[in-house]
Image (cartoon, rainbow, N blue to C red; front, side, top):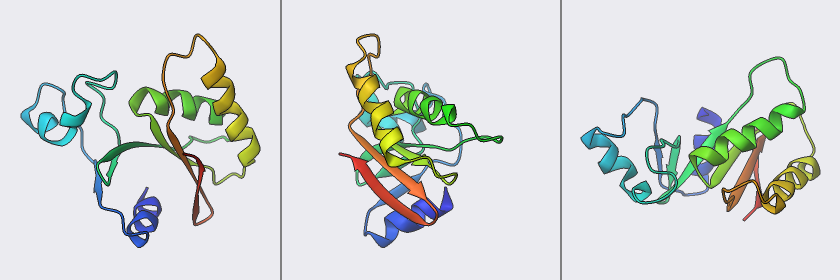
Amino acid sequence: MYNIVVIFLSLIFSIFVKDFEVHYKDKLYKEIFGGLIGTIYERKCPDLLIDGLFYEYESFAKPWKIRKISKMISHGSEQSNRLIINNTKGCTYRYIINNIIRRLHDKSFKLDIKEVWVYEKGNIVRILA
């Protein structure tokens, strides 16, 4: 996640990185994640706060399988409607975009995905905004 933070800082974004656990009943939760209270993401703890917007960073555990992209999108969208996906194994952007579009058209998928960034080999690209 360090590389992601450095890239966003180079783009002159204001960033807060959550590298500790905060319980939703804690006073600190209300200070950091107060913007989530009253939304479907209440009681969730996204990893990054970039320019006032919450982002969830998703990476994979070895061994790599292409299905893990789908799981990263599913898990990440439960935490925030803005995702950053670590794609160091090189799944195509087309596959990721099609996966997101299929989810958005699926009537059983109740969450909204507003923005997706993909980190790959030192570069970060916005593929959905």
